[in-house]
Each structure stands twice: as C-alpha cells, then as structure tokens.
Image (cartoon, rainbow, N blue to C red):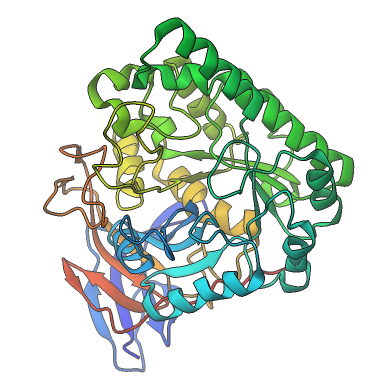
Length: 446
C-alpha cells in the first residue's frame, strides 16, 4: 500500500482549523504535526492553500442495486460519492427485492465488497410482517448500521403502519432505528381532496399533499414509541418547521437517544423552485414553503438537527417526467452535497468547521462508527482535500450518476474537491481515478 505525506495543509477537525502535516501509513492516519520527517517511503502532496477535511459520511442513500440498476448501481453512485468527498455511505433497503431477510442483506454487502469505491453499510428493511427477522439485527449490531422503518408510503411492501409491529420493533430493538416519518392517512386524504378540487395535479401540489401536519404527526408517533421503550431513534430528512419542536439541543450528541437528520435539498430549495424545476425536485418528504427552510437552518446551527445527509435517490430522466402523478420521487445529490454546503460556507451561513461536524463527526458519533469521521491518529484515512479558491460547475459532462442528471445542473460551486482518500488509498486525485482498491464494510462500536 502506498503511503502519503500531505504537507502544510489547513486541517479542519473537531472545531479547529490549523496548518499541519498529515502522514498516512498503511491506510491510517499515522501522525499529525508540523514538519513531519517520515522514516518510510511516501508520496508527498503539497497542501499549501488547500483544506483537509474528514471524508463525509452519508447516512441515507439509495443506490438501487439489486433490481433497479437501470437507475443506478453501487459502483456508479459510490464513484459519484467519492468525487464529491463522501467516503462512506449507509444505503436503504428499498431495492428489488426489498431487504426483508438477512440473506438478502448479505447479498448487498457482497455486491458492495466487489464494487463500492467508498465504505459502506446497509440498513435492514422492515414490513408489517417481518419484525422477528428484522430484530435479528440485535445479534449483529457491530456490523449493521441500523433498522429502517418507512412510516409513510413507500414501495415494495416497506410501509410499516401496523402499530403492533411498530411497538414490537421499538420495544425489542437494540440497534439504531432510522425512520421515514410521514402519515399515510393524512397524505391520502390531502391527495383525494386536491384531486377532487383540481382534477390535474402539478408539482407545486406536492408539499400540499405531503404537508407539514403529516410529517409532524408521524415524527411525534415515532418519538412516543422511542420514549416509551428508551429506544435509539434517528428520524431522517426533517423538512418542516413544525417538527423542530420535537427535538432538543440540551444534551451533547453522544448522550441523545433521539436524533434528527436534515438533507441538503431541504436546506437549499423551497416550494418557490417548483415553478423552475417541477418534478425534478419532487421528493419525499416534499420540499416545502420557505419558512421551513429558514427554520431548518436555525435548528441545524443550534444543534437540534444533528447531521446533514442527502437521501440520494436517482431516477432516470424519463421516470421524472410524465406528469406529476406518474413522476418518481427522489433526487440524485451525493456528488454535490459537500460542495453545496461549501457554497453556504462562502455565503457566510455556516462555518467550515460546522459543515465538517455535521457531515462527518456527528454522523460517526450518532451511529458509533468505528475509527472514522475524524482526523485523528490511528483512525482510518478517509480524507478529502478541498480547494476553496477554485470553482466547480455541475454539468451533464461531469455528472457521474448513472441517471445522468442533477437538479443542480449549471450551478457553480465556489470550491473544488481535488483529492479523496478512502482507507488511505488515493481513489480520486485531480480528475484521475484509481479503482483498484474497494471500500470497506463499516463497523460500529456497540
């Protein structure tokens, strides 16, 4: 394995930015300091004027393999992730077939072991009928990121709306439960009412159908289950101002039993953007009115919202067309999530240190990821070099998603990802790829 010495780079880690040298040896961070003189053969990288960040960990992606590989594969989307500075991902169970058994779960791990360029973990899926199988995750808590529960509508039988099933899983689970919270009855009632009123629905109706009330009621129910049994609950993609009253910043993250995620598209877009982008920004939960985005930013900065992710969910361009009701819900985002947050750093909305906290440190803490998420001696060398004086424009020519499009096309980000190390391997550097080494399975300190 090649070893590296990154010289005179601005290291952004644990709330501090300081110029240091970083020695990478045998896949790990061997030493941090000034004027390091290595006693081993190294490839030296001049970091002057650049920033070194811990690789982002995305706790919510949909990479579509197996069964939906016309949209994406673990290989294509992990490559896009690495190009965007995301070195680890946690992938969802709504593939085909849905991941309702541990045998199917391990099939996904086998695919990733042979093709993922980033590190990986996969959630165990749940249905109204597979509670006992899902709870077998208890004996494998060190090598599975968690159990995923869709408490709002989904595909392939993944909706869990039976309260007896929910009660059993929340009572008995010893691993993190991640929930998609939208109330199915409220969604259906809103849809039927608007359909009757308008006849033909349009993209701007999406946040009226999947509204704030539906999100709040479902999140409240999940929290009530978690509080009843003291379960470790993580609510994904919070999208409303109303839900923020359910979360607290009174404890450090490591002591919280109930945590929350916000996604980059809910921090960037509002319902005003449906006029320009239409179905391209249709996603679940919906992008909503501007007051929600402003409240999400405030809650992110005051630590009621704990981590930033993408909910990367690619569909073909054709699947996003065909009118509102036929259009698939989901956005491809993982290649541009860190760059988008760096845009907001330049805008003065968030500090670079806070971005690193929310996209790397906090995810590692939230999930108890072993040896990753921080720039620490002895930790795995999952690292990203960023040039904050360059620009990157998202175009069809440089988008790596298999679906070939992005809602951020033609957006120019005020930064560039120049190098991405995964387990000490320089997988991406100045536009060049080394795909000989694959990512590793994430492990958890549970």
